Image (cartoon, rainbow, N blue to C red; front, top):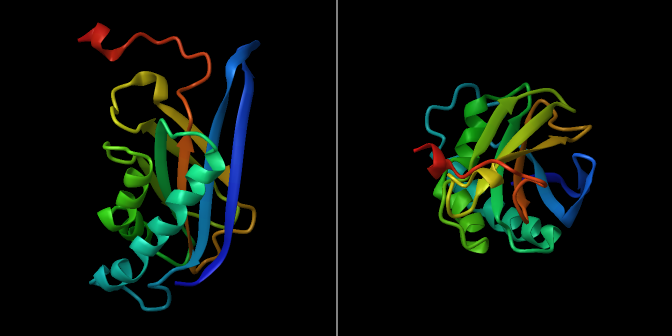
Length: 183
């Protein structure tokens, strides 16, 4: 696997809705900008060798890094794969939609739910939103949130940006009733 760079972003929200947040809300994002393992090969029917060669290593690299950046236990999490214009969306999906990748994050975060995801193709500097959900119960509305990400010089046409994101809490100032109140 060829890693061009790793980008870490930590956001700390201190006010929301014109009011101080009781406890600053932290969200961390760690992205690896990697060479697309299928670049230049035309249509690849069997993606498994590239998945086997890269997905677990990426998960093992990113999971502890995002939790370290968060500096708190994760309560919500998500993932993304942004493929450069020379690749297929399926290339990014192949790397992140496998237990070989996601189980590293689930284990590190003591999580049990599926990781919500976004995957898309775009030019360098494309903006993408990563959906986050609660780590053990995806129906907990307070933890449904989104973090916006942009890496100015990535992905190049033959790269993929693989990302993990974590939040130490739900949305700041959340006030929605529990889902159970509507059932």
